[in-house]
Image 1: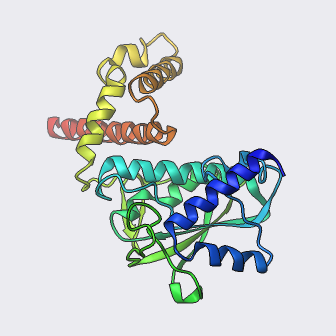
Image 2: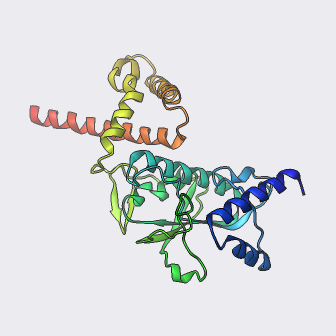
Image 3: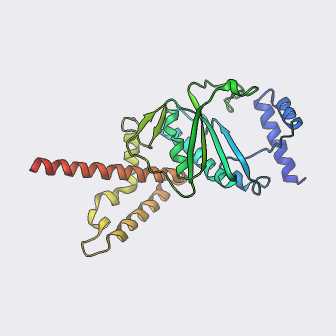
Length: 281
């Protein structure tokens, strides 16, 4: 066994036994059942783990992903952290599936947790939702949900309404999502809910990143005798460079969110122009 493996196991065992009083007995029970236990695995880079990078799985399960307790759950900042975690997990897990393998994520479906929008995050990673089933804890004897961090890490958290989302490879066919958020059976389709209080803050950031794109139509779309597509792409490249400089360290999913917002604003502007034309006639 490598020295790095011993260190990782030691740190993992110490962390688990410090957080959970039944950790040691649970690990021993798993070993007796023949389970392989791997410590210090980052869900957003697990495909690079030395013990996992050559392995493929029929099922990859992630129960109640959570990026940590950094404020109120409905805060825009924390929701972004949660989305970044799930996005990173999907990006890694998709490359660790066997043919016909599935990724299962159990998650709360009430607000604000439904605003993470797992289905759309999965679609950005070429994954497709095939089934959503209610999560019932009594279907999993011996399973106890835990907070996992902080002074109350060993305490359970209220589950409320939650479901298990099942995904498979979409084979390159990415789903097109409506830009109008729709709540159906407790789930949200589309990143942007017009009624969400955080939207104004997001629009403010979006304007900062894309002000050149939004405010200089000629520079953005080119003169009539110039190649319009080239200029649009150039504007988006400049916006991306600005995003990297201004929002250093932010996950790529945030830039995708900004692009979604730009599209929504474009649709709104077209509607505004149509209304003006109607009134003129």
